[in-house]
Image (cartoon, rainbow, N blue to C red; front, top):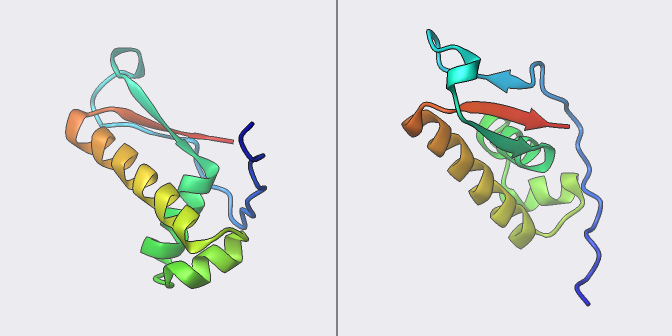
Length: 91
């Protein structure tokens, strides 16, 4: 039996829940889902420019868990940019 998922502290909610390439109708786009923990990890590390250790403390998770979440979020964003997909931030 796997360990239960630990609750993650999210201190900031996104201003919008969708991003899409300009000039393409939403009905013609595939979308990827960016979870709130991925959003928060990217916000803290890439936008706020704080260390992974400090960001892990703020989210109340370990640095290694934060690193996995960050890697997953960056992969999703890169996929959306490279392949022209919409990004849905899931609440």
